[in-house]
Length: 383
Image 1 (cartoon, rainbow, N blue to C red):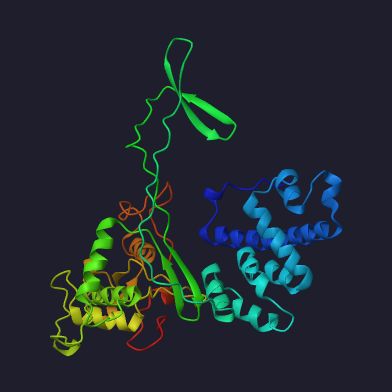
Image 2 (tube, rainbow, N blue to C red):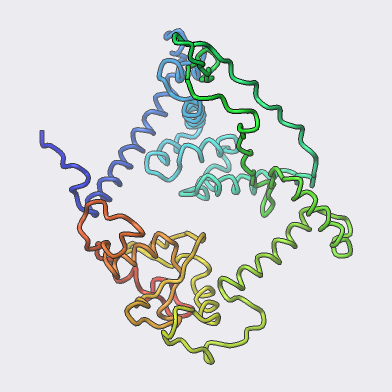
């Protein structure tokens, strides 16, 4: 059998090709696994293996985690009624989490249209699709004080063989481990706050839930009073939306130069590379052209969807004499800005941003289509 080369020795193109092939194989195996789980469940063969349920068989015999077992059993049962789910799982049009979300809402009448709309969607996008198909009532505006969280009990202490004080660490309901580290005080034990919840309820309506500090609660009450003339009923959602809108306008004005009354237009703006500062008129034009989104497009025509932490990138680098004209500047996410910087200056020169990890200092060639900044109003891929 031919010995496979270490991954560090293969080319970038081969690495990406192998990854795509492995993913296709994984999807086909996953589809077969789900089909087998469904058949075992239908025949109730788990009883032969001393398991009271299919869930117990998956977790105790097959050693799947609870979440893995739940997803696969849910999809397996749904696929018995809707066999096309296995095909869509195998070819990557749907994923396990998405099918599990869709399963309760699929019927023989709506499955064709619903599955077409769910194809290649993320879990969040599928949740929004379900909220449109099966809307739920609005969540009421509510501010209430949560009960005080009790401090955890102090860890038990034991004496070791040399009369050393040992701290007992809880690992589970029936297991403990000993440590000689000093026990933390109750004031040092800080539990992380629960993550905020953003949940679609219906088309264009969301439930937003989070835990606020006493300071934020006080600020919201003060804002409610100040906005009483504009929001007479004191609706919390309307107050927060107005406050967020004003803050967003200030931030976009500072970052992208957006304003309803610009001081200068592009015609009156000096775009020569006299300094690193990009004029506000240029930032406005580039932001509008690129739609506040990374404009990087690969050879297959896929555009990067990132909208977070965007940076202005010079097609002809500023350090090599590039100017600030809109045709020479585009919005890029951090990853693609660093990637193209490596192409412009070399990996060795950009080592402070991303270590070369033992590879040669020359960056991989970047297709010209990926580096083309489109003219105003044109496709981000350019010509």
